[in-house]
Image (cartoon, rainbow, N blue to C red; front, side, top):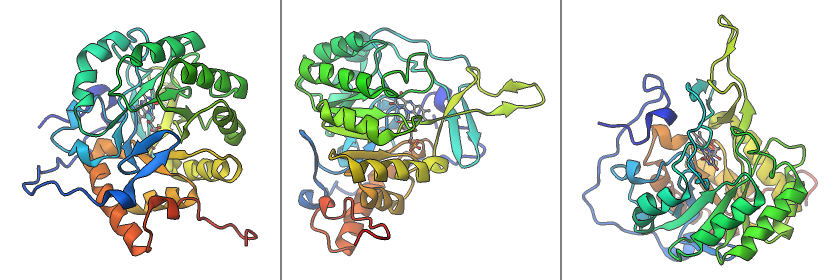
Length: 338
Ligand SMILES: Cc1cc2nc3c(=O)[nH]c(=O)nc-3n(C[C@H](O)[C@H](O)[C@H](O)COP(=O)(O)O)c2cc1C
């Protein structure tokens, strides 16, 4: 069976088990909308479990493994105005409890995305959140204007945080530029706007505040951490591009810290992402302050995980006596909070 993602982003098969999901025969039974529905600024989602950009391809690759309509939303690979070849191989390497990648925003560009993928993605029966990246603020704005022609898109996620491209983190490491890109996109289109932030900064709360003040409907925390894998015998970096972005279980405590810091100091809905692989992870992010979550690296070895987590979340909330997701969001108490 073909793996559900392209070879460039595929972790090695020998150490990450890929278990294709059997397509179930029973009818689809959606969990009660009332308990799982969430609102992120102007964006309404049927449930808070999304799949993260760059880890779910353009969804076609995943159709044998997931009933898309069960997910809260799908976020395809970042789209840039023009095609990008991405970085030289190797582009991924496994590390302890994580994955280091330097894909470099390989994609066919905005027009090809509209022509080849948008129709399919908008028919999945779930919210489509299009993740975009420009090299300049004008490029972000122009992409938003073009995509505004397609009302089937539920929201835009601004990738101002990719560590693998030159200029990729420039916006997300500077509060002023973050604010400018968010407000220009917000005024250029009618979509809810999610600002996806980099953890490679001293104070992520400061950047989140700038995004919120500029009108972001939510902030997505976090993109990958810049890292390095070394082939010491060759005296070379393992990845073709040198540095890469670290994801997976290794970054979960760091992502939780970022979510918690922002939740405690900025009044903006948070979409938490980083190392989520189980229902306990989901609950930890919600309690720490996230209103929704994205599943990233885990999709590579368990493509049906996100769908399973929707059911498990419903059961976990019921077990806690919660009538809605919002009842558990941000309930983490630190010593001295009482
Ligand atoms: C192979 C790979 C490719 C990625 N590509 C993108 C991308 O195109 N755009 C983006 O915003 N984030 C991208 N990411 C970052 C993920 O969306 C996510 O923020 C990050 O991996 C942390 O979540 P995780 O630990 O659950 O993977 C990529 C991550 C991986 C592992």
